[in-house]
Length: 81
Image (cartoon, rainbow, N blue to C red; front, side, top):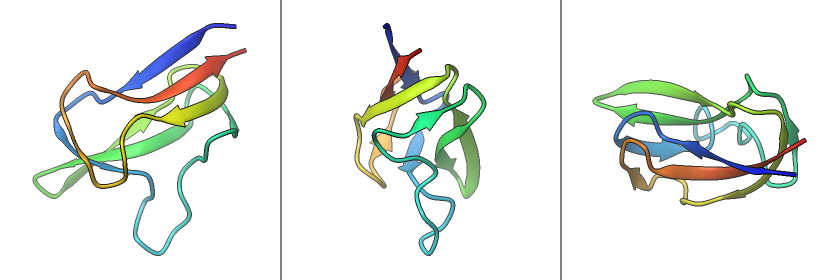
């Protein structure tokens, strides 16, 4: 199986959940679809969903919740399958 990196499309702040009171979009070990939202990246109070881009199992997150990320920075790894 191949590993695919999910990358941030824009610079901003990485969020694993839609809001502080909600569960994370996905957790490590979860099977996900290509169109599933993995996280949000916020820039200037605008929140942009980031889709998985490939179906498989989310192996790990490469950044912590509320970390600042750059455009093109890998934020998670999916094992496609």
